[in-house]
Length: 397
Image 1 (cartoon, rainbow, N blue to C red):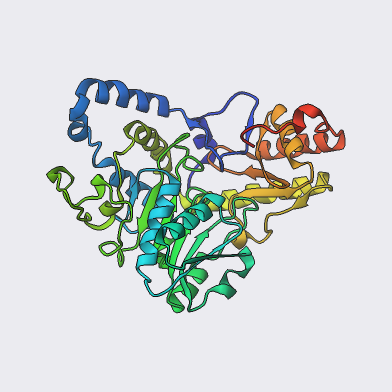
Image 2 (image 1 turned 60 degrees about the vertical axis):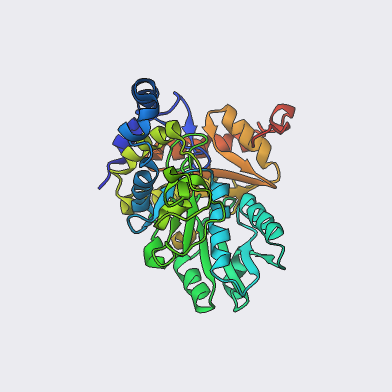
């Protein structure tokens, strides 16, 4: 059983801050600075080009991928890191549509992160073969999976509300109708145990800068199921996805298995930060994490609803339908969140009216939850949010 009172001590958390935004950017693990410095001075500085071999830089994307794989229920050897999440979405979706060449509809929902939809729209323009991106409400996904669907592209947890899709049921429905299932785990990996293999998912992608705490700009990951590993066609045929990168052939030959989903040079310094973050995750019991997450979110919902009647809960009450965040609606949500941040309670805002709070058992305590709810109630009761300063939109909300 993981002792979450001890894992809290592994993070740098500014004095007086209650950080409820790890679902957007995780805090800094205390070990990260030294690990990154080691990579810069002892590896890059001392080995220079030799670091690719001497320091295992070239092998790191797959090794790190397997450590993430434990958290998402992936088979060993089928997850690799590199590039950004948008790139990995494009890779997974492009590979998926080629596995269903006689169909033309990609199904997603309007709770999907817009970047995923943009990637789908861009792919469709490139293919120029009458493809359609069909977007429905999250609750309507299952009913819209039919024999004309080529691929379902779904983010497991809605970034706005924290509503969680039933991965196993929707993947089964997709397969029953002959579709390929692609899952985005941006708000799942590190939030609760994911079971890709058990759910029979075809492809999955995700980021490492949110719950996994690898830092801003940290690399994304991609998973390909064993049944597709040697047949999935990499649309982005990068040199490190080649079967023999250092043969420098003029023509592309895809690598073996998950290696074909590598694209360009891996971000060595960012991988060092990810390595430090995963050292914490290597010791975490995912079932214990889930139980603690639900306890924290239940506690926050109860406290806020008891003291802030003008807020409307956007997050499902049912545990099975909830990720690890809590969201509330309010027409002045942006200003309220700015007032909260000024008081040391850091969450974020999502248009048009959502106050969003992430709960991460690795460093969030019961005391944090209680104090955050108390400060939120004071801000609402006294209308402390009602100032021009808090209503002025910043570049990042």
